[in-house]
Length: 318
Image (cartoon, rainbow, N blue to C red; front, side):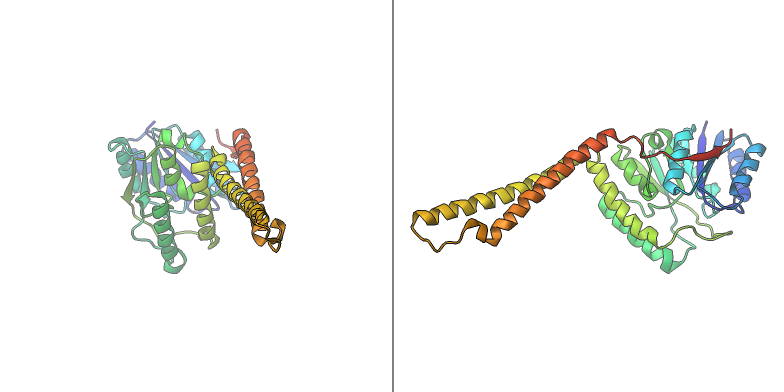
């Protein structure tokens, strides 16, 4: 199979028929063998009924329906588990991503050998204050931290080699950072393609201002997890050992100073426990020990975690 298209959605009943027809037209005009996987992320409208009808009309269409809303990352992860195509395309269901871009993305993966190609919406039809300006700042920060030269990390329109999506795990709200996850998984050949952005035709956006706050928290989280997720002791143990040794050295120095003054017969020197520096040293040793124990517990937890990506699927098409 040439292409698998994964489309996460939430309350997009009006967009789905037009989107499906558009994709069929593109696939047939380029003679692609394909499948479309719609992942209904707990819609409360008639989206699932529309998906069921699309599945009946076209055997290349498949659907998965969550019991409740888990988020876009969960929907993508479930879709990635099911794809069979050599090239995997992800796109949003709101008609703002153009299916006409699929052949170009497919070419970059198959002929140019990219592991991942991310869309870049140079011209956007979203609110400048609510989306465009915050998005530019978000992308600038992510570029600086990840060292990946992409203009639009959060673009829903992306293409992947099949082995990339089978090798990465997307959870929480990490869909914004799939290129970062892929790079740290060893897939560093990441490209970019300028794509056309469509005006929203139906409904309203499902993302609010909290996505920017969550986005930066997720960036910190993914940076830590990618570097230390399999070896948390390397992070906590390092700082814990440093803090403990700092406190220990200060304590030894205070004791030596006390003994030196006692040997000279000076009786006015304060007791070691009377000095604020002693309590700072004690605090540093306790803090270091706690960090060390946190690293040890993190190491044990990371070795035994198996339930990170379990979601309740209400129903799915055959």
